[in-house]
Amino acid sequence: MKDYLKYNHWIKLIFVCVLGNIIIESCTKETKLISPNEGKIYMSQAVDGAGELHFFRIDSVQHFYFGASVAGFNGAPQNTNVSFEIDTNLVAQFNQEHAYLAYNFRALPDSAYQVSGLETSIEKSVSDSKPLTVSVMVNKLDPFTDYCLPIKIKSFSEGSLDTAMSVGYFFIDSLYIRSRFIQGKLTVSKDNNGGANAKEGSVRLNDNDLSTKFLFNFEDNSWMQLKLDKAEKLNAYELTSGNDAPERDPKDWQFQGSNNGTDWTTLDEHHDYVFYSRNTTIRFEYKDPENKDYLYYRLLVEHTNGSDLFQMTEWRLLQYY
Image 1 (cartoon, helix red, strand yellow):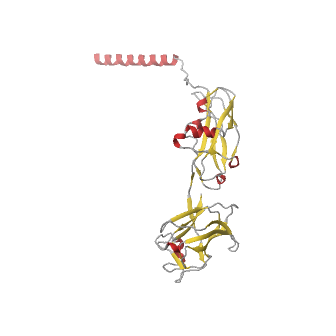
Image 2: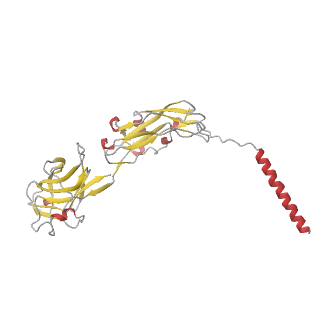
C-alpha cells in the first residue's frame, strides 16, 4: 500500500510539472527571428560560379534566368519593385578578378540574345522575385570564344542594397556537344573491283567497324553519297584514315548537300589536307550559311595524296542535339 501511495505521489508531481511548463510556454511571447542582413536586396546569381551557363552547340534557342531576392527570414516587408541593367563594361572587371584563371571573356554580342525584361517585383512576405528570361541564339556564337553577360541591380523601391551581391556574371566558357550518327543509303561513283560487298567494298565505308576499309581505283572527282530517310540538318562529319599507305588518303575534297541528288551546295571543303596518322578519326565541323536541311550528303574527292588508289576506313555524318 505504501508503494502504491508513493507511486501515485510521483505521478501527481510529474503531472503538475508538465502542466506548469505548458502554462509557462503558452504565456511566453514568440521571438521573431531577424537576420543581420534582413531586408537587403541582392542577386542570388551573384554567388561566384553561379552564373556558369551549360549550353549545347545546337541551332535551337536556349535560356537562362535571373532575378532579385531579399535577405532574411521574413521576406519582403511589402511589394518591392526591382530594375536591372546590362553593363558590358564589367566584363573587363570579371576577367581581372579571375586573372589567376587566365580568363579572357568577351561581352555576349547584342545580336545573340534577347531579354524578356529588366524589371520585376518581390511580393510582400516572399523572398524571391518573379524570374526574368534571357534567350540565347547559340548558333550565332563562335564556339571557340568565351562570353560573359554582366547583369546588375539598378534600382529598387524598398530596402537597401547588398553591394557585394548586386551583380550576376553569366558566362559561357564552352559549348557542350551531344552528337548522334545519321544513317543513309550509300552509293558511290566507283566501287571496289570485287563489288560493294567485297572485303574492301563500299559497304565497309560506314559499317561502324574501324578494322575494315573501302578501297578502289581512284579517278579525280570520285564521290560517295548518302541518301537519308528524310531531310536533316547536320553539324559535322567524320573521316577515318586507312590503315596504311597515306598517299591513298583524300587530299582535296568538298562536302556537299542536295535535296534532289543533282544540284549540290558545298558546305565544307579542304585542300592539301594531311592525316597525321593511320586509322585516325577526324571530325570536321561546318556551318551552313543557308541553315538548310538536306536529303543527300556527298563527299566529292578531287584528289588523293598522289596514289591511283583511294582508301578510307569510315565516313560518318553527325547531328548535334
